[in-house]
Image (cartoon, rainbow, N blue to C red; front, top):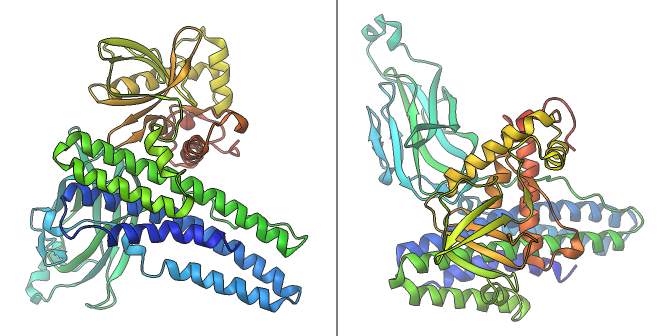
Length: 499
């Protein structure tokens, strides 16, 4: 246990050390990439620390019951240390929506850090091409709504009566208009006085694109009210996973503590390696698009290596950078393109690389077949999602069309396993700039089933980390309302218990 808490502290202190070692002046692109990495690490480690703190609380009670008050006191001190680590860090997890970067619409006006002037419907603020790490968020802000100091004659029309609530909307805007999955409407209630601001939370919102265009607008005009909005921010959702304390054995505090320590150590190691791998991928993408920053990006990678060496010698981050993301033996292909012909299915298609055409199969996921005569595939997919067999081909065609449109004309990076299928197909992990692993996208949209190999066939911690993320995304998609993709057809989604 004494070695476990420093493992958690390392995750948090690494962020602080990265910031402390950062030169006073550096390119904005590198600063943005580092900030996104730190927000991801903070969000991931916060959930783990909360779970561990609750496990410690349970063990503390057990130890105190046996009369070992000194050990209980030591556990209490460790709990307090965990809680202190996150004191004041909530703001570091959020991505602010600065009014200085917003375009005002209608009668809306920005005064310092406050947004107001809601006299006409459609008024609001819009953030064009706003850079945001893909993921799930809540919109949070502080609001105050009071009556405008107007003369009595203005109340002749009910339109100019002060309202008790105001209706607003928040949207992701695309070339096709409003993204339906990220359209949210909500009310702001009248405040008790002119100085009290209430925190409003809206969501969840899931963004798969980067950059995005965001719009905050009023659905009606409120000329007889003064409505002030401030501190607009997008806060990553960290409570999607099961946050209940692990069930600990009652046979003894030592065994319980050992179980809690081992569980947390594994989870922290997985989260740390996955976060570091994603950060290094972002740095490599940045180096490819901005060659002028190569020297500074190389220095940042070396800094990451030094931080990891403090934790685990030369086996963690070094393995990630020297073996293509921690996957020893994989062939690393960059800047491939989806072939012009239609994909065979959502997870099986051809790519073009250096004049060669390669058949690729996505590792660890299975999309529905597009033809009814593929009986084994239809049965397998129908069983996984608990849907009718006759619905499977339609889901398969939707997945195929999704892959064709999502991957078209994008640079693709593939990590290909050295062994080929019997027909020559290559099993691969597929990454996209600013998105990450494409398998995650398919699973998140309910268009693919996660097919994880047996644990003994998972070659290293990096594979386990990616598989853990895929499983978590699948569980979240299954529980989401409205359900995405095949989960919308599942009998489990409509009243049954999740499998």
